Image (tube, rainbow, N blue to C red):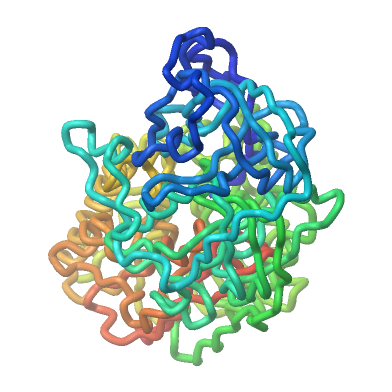
Length: 616
């Protein structure tokens, strides 16, 4: 993964069917002069919201819609929410709605207002991205009728309130869209949230399952016992089980007035957190907190794995998140401490996301000598061994990742414990293959790349294969960083089930790695091969199935209790993205995911490292 700066949450719409160039966001409206039966002034919010995700009054002008102001946002997407204190008896129709003002709102919480304006459907990130729209009133005229009114009672969101189902199956005639399906809030969590869009909601003493971020947000789960991790998080267990009780929490109070709290997974958002239920592209449904609880520490600490025994080979993998000489020394030092103090100085470390010597500067530089020298120096300074390294510089701009960064996979190894078998000839475009040497499987090039010219690796990192020798026994290690999940539809998309378009490339990548390992095992049945790194896919995915096809590899993650299977957190879901797989020649092993990053607000990387120990 690499960090991107988020755009502002809203840009001003321009004209009918206007498209914001800044966000690629689309605001669907018709002419503000279109006639409508809604001009009678008798329309209520639940009429505008309707019983689907799309307003039956989309594109029409509405007049004097009454409501109580339940929340005001003066930053980002500026506006306010109103809620009708006189609800109808249909649970599918929301009583709340967002009023987009663009300029800072002049109303206050508790004001009774009437609002006139255009009913629009706003798609964060644009219609093509696939997310659900947000029904709102745009270009409003607002009249304050009275102030200091009692707010409508919040809907309490707790474990009992969330349906067991997550989302209905999409309408196949509409591209699997659920956008126009009648909401069934008693059956599906996404329908429940849609039926509460813009309404005053409340969570209390909520389990924090995703740490606070630089974007002033955190994730809670109102069903914390569902798929619980061993450290207070929520595990993404399958495509059919996305954990419907997860919600993002943001504060309506600008951070300049009240700093957003720092929180780790396993903490609790104690007390009451209440405000309108909102939606955005960076996580779906969220509580825009008018009232924010306080963070109570759960006390989790970064883990430390045991040291390998004298006769054990320890092989680790660590995504160091775009490491380059432009990073401050603190990042190098923290990553080095992770290697030494938390991973116990493994014999071999497969690194992902090592950038070139000037990082994201796009000037044709591809060497990473400075990056690796600085990192290995930091490891020595932390009390670790003087690691040597092997890698292959990529072609400029051909391996994806942050533009200009030329990320690649690299091996570090401790020469006091293990030796590298150098076989020259490997470069960015030359494929390594497998031959027999003295009855053993050997690589034609070590280090070498696996089929680097194959289309499966377009704009993606190529696997790095290397031969090592430990106590006289050869071990082949293959470091990987598969194609990212960019372009996949989100779990909260309006298309259900969401499409995972990026999986196609990872499947092809997995098949190539599997085929390469088959070649090794065909030459030497008991060959000891470790395939590891950032696979960018889950243990239950088709990618993993392709990697393990034919039984030539097995994923070590299944040796762990289910509650400990995660290396990454996304939108409150603790999930497996990094994996270690071994051939049958490695009969016994001890595998550990060392949780030092993903659960914490203060991270050296967004991934947790992993390590496997075995006796060759």
